[in-house]
Amino acid sequence: MLLNTPRFQQRLLVEATKLLSDHFSTKVTVDSVSVNLFTQRLSLHGISVDDQQGRQMLNLERLAVSLNLNGLRQRDIIVDEVETEHLRATLLKEKTDSVPNFQFLIDAFRKKPRQDSLKTTKAKKLHLALEELQQRDVSIFYNKDGKLYEVSFKELVVDESWGERKVNVDSLRWHTDYHRPRKNAGKKHRGFFDPGHFDIIANLKGSFRLIGKDSLQATLKESNFRDPKTGIDLRDVHFKLEANRKTARLTDVTVRQTNTTLMTRRADILLPSKKEGRTLAFNTDTIHGKAMLCDIARVFAPALKNFRIPLRVTTLMSGKNHSITFRHARVRSADNHLQISATGHLDHLKGKHKAVITFDIHRMYARSGMAEKVINQFAVKKLMMNQLHRLGDLHYKGSFRIVYRHLGFRGRLTSVPGFLDFNFGLDGNTKYVSGHVSSTDFKLGDAFDVKDLGPVTGHADFRVDISKPRTKKMRQEKGGKLPIGTVDAFVDDCSYKGIHLHNLTANIKSDGAEALGNVEGRGHIFDYFSQFSYVSTKEMQKLKVIKPGFRLHRKEKKTEEEKLKEKEEKMKAKMERKEQKETEREEKQKVKQEQKELQKQQKEQKRLEKAEQKQLKKQQKESNNKSAEESQ
Image (cartoon, rainbow, N blue to C red; front, side):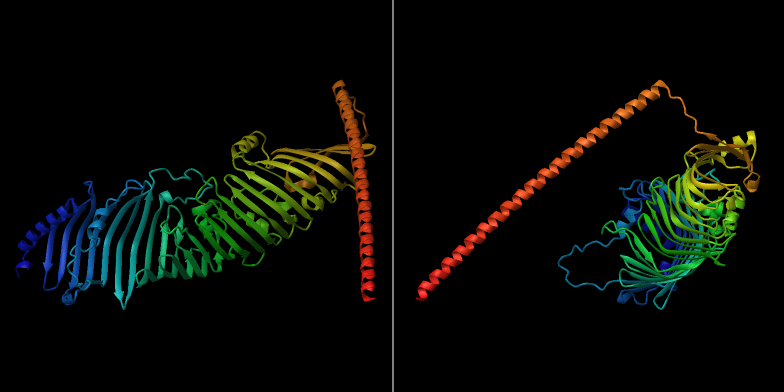
């Protein structure tokens, strides 16, 4: 009865906090305590624990514990319920190799080796079982690599039933703050994904079962994760888990966003361990589902915010610490007007400047009109759309590679007018797109709606300015909607207005308002020359041909320097021919001498063989004579 009185309990509390402060070598305070032996319930209010540097580490408004001590004699204690309210914890580690500020608590409760060597009988191990845990309004602050994180939740409920623990977490919040601006701040074309500025709110429902000392079975039945600022919006994530200290297996995995649902039957994970020298590795069964790229726009690529073409996706995925590989990747639109099969590899993912993304496109098919539909999903200027439409059905095979601020494409594009082999790159530093394209019998007139222009065989190098400040200034001065850049082409063979031409050089320069071109071709007797211009790629039939004509070859006068250079080149060529003849003569003599030596060796070999045969016959004859004498 005395133990149930408030006065005795308060006195007992003062002594207990003093003992705890001395034991932990830090300040421990509890405002009040309530103990009821009849209900076997303990309640503590206003708990505060400082770390050993004098900083407040734990602060708890209320802790209530309901016990069942009926099995105490058998060393069995059942904790019916543990409740906490308004817990604040600050867990700090100053340096990577330093001790965390809560280590002294772990050391205090760590089991120490028995000192009494004379005692041989072992006491029964105390068995402690927790039936239910309820935590409300919890906030935990911790640092890692010099950065501060916060984990908090409104309510956590863990309830045990038939060996399985059910877990419900309401409004779990993970907040990070690097105390620096967002890394993509002010960059409209970059996503908002930034681990230094997460503010994720999650709700989870699941269960888990411990199997032995180091194995676990768990089920995440339903969950959602949202970060409005970053754009993370996972409407539902659920899976089953079997794990031990080395490996984990996820089964029946589903991830759902607003318009995207991806599933896989299985995913195996090799868990990392510095102690055992293991690094992270994983692989999955086929991932399949539907996707709409606008769901990842805010997170990774704002340019995709209007991309609402429904896609069907399948792929196999595997990876290691800093790399991911996609195998047998298939992407297609719901109407099959777009089909892509590819393999890809992402490497050096932890280093922004070293990261490499490579995809090999084994096959891409886009039905006529699909390419324009894809481009229209982006808020960009639409250039040469009429020409794109005239290409008809598109087939592509090639690859692309992305390294920091550089993007490269290469391959073959096959269309109705013909094929184009191309290789071009986008330089994020200089803001130019440059590359090379070639073809044979490409119906350029059909593609550009120029009826008088026939099939073209040749190649070209191009360079297009994509810098917004430079192009904006140029367009303010001259206007126009043409691409700004240059094209240098060599035409092996073509025809224009029924005239067959070959060995032409063409140069085109566009300032955005007007494109001017020069064409020159050298024949056996006559040279062809012409100029042309156009102001819009939408009306190429209005191309203006200026001053076309032919002229005889003109013998150009050479300067003294050019004559001297030509003479030196002729002398050099003459000396080279002389040296070549001398070398050939020496080689012939060498070959002739080698043949003589070979013939001499062959003769000597034959002579030795004859002498050997003669000697062998002589020995055989002597042997026969000797045998005849012995028989007589």
